[in-house]
Length: 130
Image 1 (cartoon, one colour):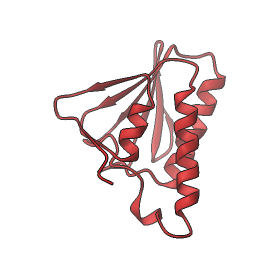
Image 2: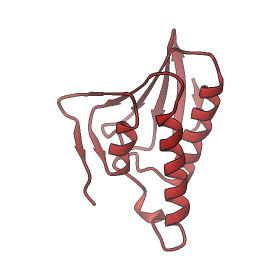
Image 3: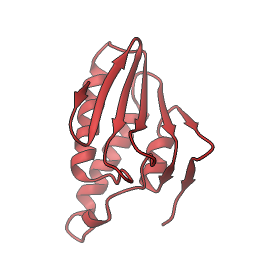
């Protein structure tokens, strides 16, 4: 397994798995978004893997953007980084699947929706609270 404390990457056969690792709610902050983007760009340029699965190592897929970084000074940087991740994911050269077991709210919901497929458990909850 490769990765950092916020996002990890693993492969098994033709499946590459990008796992969100910011428990308990996987709020997307600038550093996590930077790491996701870096991995997506690296994977997109690589011929390895036939499918990309995005999941979480905790009960929540993602509860959205980090509120503490939504300041007057930081919100535009946060949104710009987030939009870059979504654009990169939506144009990813291989099929993408979001595996949602818990909440996917706000930007987390949109992150899942940017994938080609969403596999949701019976405990999955989707929403746009804003």
